[in-house]
Length: 81
Image 1 (tube, rainbow, N blue to C red):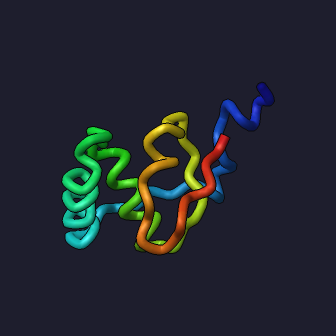
Image 2: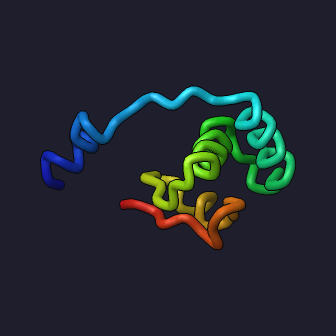
């Protein structure tokens, strides 16, 4: 594994995103809508924020759940690694 993959994205590509009221509501929709997957708040919040920001790529080790969940703005997210 290369050092860049261990360290994550360069500092200029990192930022903290606060959840909005609409994000919290969407998280609840996702947790209820995909109850059979038992998604946690972290997974739901990643999808909610990705939808709000129009992001199509998600870095996750949880490919099983993210391959099933359908964001509103995409047929499916691109999953990394």
